[in-house]
Image (cartoon, rainbow, N blue to C red):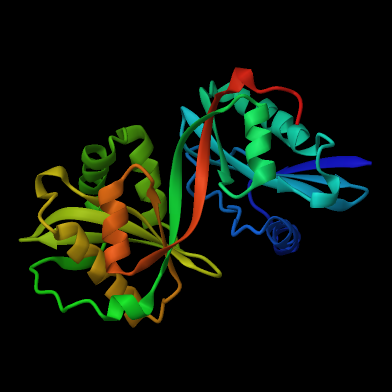
Amino acid sequence: MIEIKSFIRLDDSEISLVRDLETIVNRKDNLNSTISINSEYNIVSDLPTIYLLYLDHQLVSVLSIFMPKLTEVEISGFTHPDFRHQGYFSKLLDQFKTKIIKYGLIDLLFICEYQSIEGVRFVQSLNANYEYSEYELTFNHHQFQSLPEINSDIIVEVSSTKDLERLIEIYQHTFNIPTEESRPMVMKTLNSERKTQFNAILNDIIIGTCAVSLNVDSTYILGVAIDTPYQSKGYGKVFLIKVIQELLKQNINNLMIEVDSNNANAYQLYRHIGFDKRSEFQYYRLKMDQVKEEE
């Protein structure tokens, strides 16, 4: 008997089941994937973000979505190796489509690790178009410690709600994120117990920002942004180094950062500071009305 369940958030027992299946898939396919089960950053708060398919009470397929904007959604997932090619992930995708259609979604972005033969095969079967890759980098403490000492007037402080409008402005200038999308994103970080927003301050002016997300196994540095008038002056490097130093003072060591493969400058900066490439994830774009019914 097939049973499909959808959740905005999972309880501990469900998280354990997902992680156990994830481990089975990663070992079988030699992957490093970690599926997102956090709905905190989704722009639509009441949209189910995790879809689970059970066969005779056994979890066999998982679909996770991340919706940072109203015009597209990122989709990732996996199916137990013993239950592939039977249409189970497609059933989850169909279930998700019934939930999302009322939002007038334009694009689906399928994410799969580049080594995932099954993942690439599936998105290609949908006629999705490869768009770009994203690198996941892990922190190399030894390399970071070997960096020369920096002298800079940049000050790092934890952001507060009084900084909201300035942070929105920086994200607009740097990433071209509209106010209606950046405002809820920043507010959720400022109000979160597991996330911290940092400011880069120069001469009492906030010139940059980034977020830090504390997870069980790792800590992600997200959305590193320096406002456009202050770019190409070395401030981004100094800011990131000082944020890392602050995290190390708090005994937060297992740091991760992600970067678009097209952003060569940021990639080289992160590598220079002390991050090593761990995984590469490919993004495939598809109009939702193009999704086929087959897996």
